[in-house]
Image: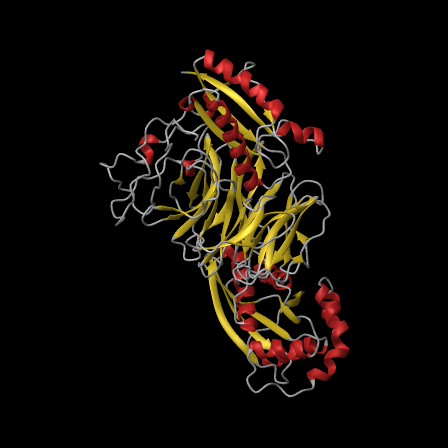
Length: 188
Length: 449
C-alpha cells in the first residue's frame, strides 16, 4: 500500500573492506552517492572504500541509486504541522491524532514542499527495539498522509528511537510527550 | 606465616584461613597420579572448597632493571583477574621468592601451603630494552613435593605490562580448566561525550578507556566481529541511522554495511564471521536480514508485517534468536533457523528484548520489562527460565564474555547508567565503570588474538 516513492536506496548496499582499489565502472559505489557527513568527521570516519573487484559474486545493489534524501539537518521546524502522539508500545494512529493528521495533510497538499517525519519513543523501551518502534510510528504517520493524498515521494521518515526525547522526567506526562511523530519541512 | 598475615589485603587470605580446618585432611592425601592443573582443581573442589587459593608473590627480576615497578604491579593485575574469574582467591603483594634457590622456594611454598594455599605462581621477570618477559611457573601446593604444573614464557613490550599480566592470568585459568581465561579481552560501549553518544573501548577490567568514534552524532549498539578486529554499530553520522563497521586497531576507513532508507540497526556477526545479521526496514517494516560479507548479498529472514529485530546467533551458527511482536501482544523472543524457517516462540510473558545467545550455547540472556527492566535467562529449548537481577533500578543490555560465564550489563541502580559485570547465574554483580558520564551498551570482545 505505501509506495515509498523517494529513493529506495539511499546508500548502496555494501562496501567490502580488504582492497583499496575499487570498481571504477560500478555505478553504485558508496563514495559516489553517500550523503556528505554532518559535523566534523573523526579520522576514522572517512568515506568508505569502494567495492573491491575481487569479490567473486558481488551482488548488484537492490536498486540503482537515485536521489538520496536530503539530510535531516536541511529540514526546518514548522508550526504548520503539529505533532501527533501514540499509546505506549503502539504505533497505530488514534482518533484524535487522525484529526491532526487530516489538518497536516491539508496543509501539505496546499504547500508543495518536502517533509521529514520523525518517529520517537519514550524511555521505557530498550534502545534497539525503540528504533524499530519509532520507525513504525513514522511509517504509520506517513501511510496516513499518503492515504489522504499527500505524494509519498515528498515524504522521508526517520526513527530516533528514544535518542531524542523532548523531556527527561520519569513520569507518565513526560513519557506521553516523547511518544510522538514530529514534522519538519524543506522547500523543494 | 607473618608475611602472609601482613599481606592481608585480599579476601583470599581470609578464605584460606577459614578453609584451614577443611583442608587439613585433604592436604595429607597422597598426590594424584597425574598432577595436572585440572586434577588439582578437581581434587580441591572435591574437598568442598569453592575456589582455588593461589599465592602470587611479586615477580623475581632475573635480568635487567625494573624501573617501572612491574614486578609488583603485574602480579596484582593477575591476582585481580584470577579473583574476578570466580575460580580463584588470589593473594598478592607477597615478597618475591629468590630465583634458582630451591630451598627458598620450598620454604616459601611450605609457608603458603600451611596457610591453605593450593597453588603458587612464581614469575621470573626479565627486562630487555623496551620489552618485558615473564617466565610463569605454576606449582601444585597440595602435593608434598610442590610439583611444578606448568611453565611458560610470555613476552611483550614493557608498555603493555597490563596485557602481559592478563595473559598470565588467562594461562593460569587454562591450566586448571582446559579453557583460557578472559582477562585479555576488551569491552566496547557507548559513552556520552558533550551530549553525544560515542563509541568507546576499554580493557575488560575498566583500564585504558579510549574513545573510538568522534563524529558528534548518535552512535549505538557496538558489536564485535569474531576475529575481534572490527566493530559493527549503528550511527547517525550521516544523518540517517546506517550500519557501519570500523577497525579500532587498524588504520582503515569506516565502512558502510547497510545504508538503506529506514533503519539499519541491530548488527550481529555470525560465529564464523562471514555474515552479519541485522534489522532493516527497507522493505516497509523492520525485518531481520543477513548480509553475506563476501558477496554483499542480503537475505531476508522474517516476513511478519510488524516489528522483527535484534537477531542473535547460536554459537553453531545454525539458529538465530530475535525479538518480534508477532505474538500479538508485547515483544517476545523467538528462535528460527539461520535460513528463517522453523520459527518458534521462546518467551511467554512480559516485554522481552535484547536477547543474547551464550557462546556456550546453553542459555539466552535477555532483558524483561515487568515494571523496571531486569535480566533473565532461558535455555534454548525454553526450559530453566531464571531471573538474574531483581533491581534495584533498571538492569538491561547484557553481553556475554567469551567464556559463557561472565556478563557485562548496564544498570542505573546507583543513579546514572553504568556498566556492571556478573556471573551467568546472577551472582557477583559489581560495578565496572564509574562515570561521571553515562556508560551503556557494553559489548564484550572475543579473546584478543
